Length: 445
Image 1 (cartoon, helix red, strand yellow):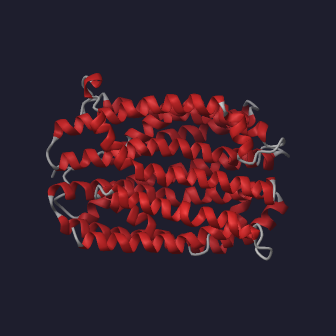
Image 2 (cartoon, helix red, strand yellow):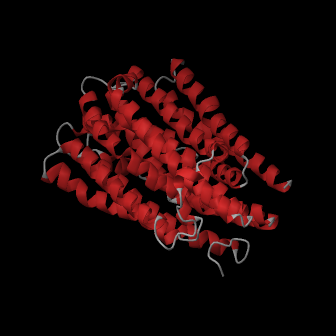
Image 3 (cartoon, helix red, strand yellow):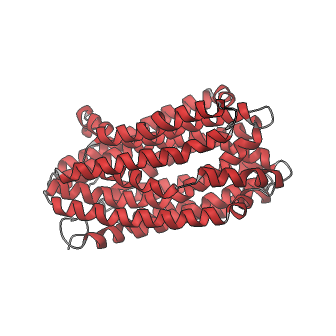
């Protein structure tokens, strides 16, 4: 059976075949995330400030990821739909336009952020103590923006052709190299947070070379031919329309993170920004497997939509819903039982840990309710319904989290705790609304 034909065979087998390698790759990425932050959080007596400085860069790094999703999460599902309709030439055009878009966007974005990094970081809550650490990391990290965006944005085109293991290697290669280089540059060469940034850029470059080798190799079923002739602004518009959901989902997260950091800096200072840095790091780790799951599910739904196999879409959603919910339920139990141990992985400061434990419980309360948001979001993208996905991305973060972040701290009895309460409230309302709407939508396909 053709590994890229999702209209035949067991849905669960397709999801597991594509999802498990991707999930393994994401767990390798998890190891990188933990090791990277652990090293920075344990560098020296100023490690807490360095960790906070790194946290100030997170919203900007997330913004780069958002632009990657704009092209990658738009181009890959659209290409999968075209292949489901047996429109191979159109699929090749989509791939070419996605690559060109990623190249130009990465160069423009890197130049803008490099030029205005100081005022941006100050607006995000940086203090005179944390700004040098943030600038040291960000100025180097931005040099790898094209490598990051191209490798991550084009990796979905490996997956939709049935090469999930090769796609897994894109992540594994970069993560493993980063894990190896981190201690060498941070401690061996005594470069501190700058060493962490250099290790990251080098690992991104290796992932870029891996993806480039596939796209120019014989295994690629959608070869890159005459890229300058494939540029089509109508195709670009379709890619961006579909990818807008992923962009808003990630971009709004970056914007909300900026507001949160600024609010924490105003109400609490560097300590609370450091705690939120750890909470967001754990959250990123927690949801990486779900990103992998959506990466497997979206091309399957898109292919079966193009092939007219509606019953298989229903089966895909049912299977995915169960997997995501039980995964988050187990994860929530672990987070609730071991907050102090998890916090200590990143930093040993007793004040940070003591202050962070109750905030940890508050922030992650009912995290399993986010299953509805992830399943709904992935299904809408696979169904080529960007308006629905965009709405619910905006609804949870902009309509719920953002106002609560600004308003709850104004209540005297709540104070800074309100910034952390906004997350579980949004999980309940946003996750439930997205999932119920998605179920209603697929019943009427």
